[in-house]
Image (tube, rainbow, N blue to C red):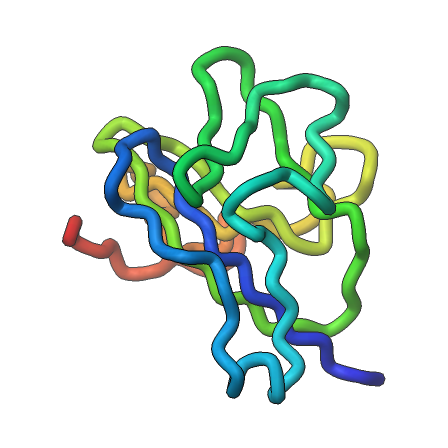
Length: 138
């Protein structure tokens, strides 16, 4: 089975000035990496018809309100995921992988936790499966 490599270069935050260009290096392109977020639009992404997410200053920003998952429209088989993120002190987020189209992503697949204050599964954990060591804010 061909191994697809993915790069998600995005951040979860609303502060301007942190954004970097969302591009791949020549080496990453040669190695087969795929850029999932261009820094300018939500092309390739589905948020279930609700406009909660937007591209702003090179990052993905979620407006306050009910939680809405942002799903990449193209399914992948085997992959390596690289992601950059930043969130506020009270932020609670995650990256869901291998989730079904229907149902709760955290229970139909895996959630990579992005929330240091979770009592059992801090940032970097696979929720309900593998506990990571907590990371300190940069």
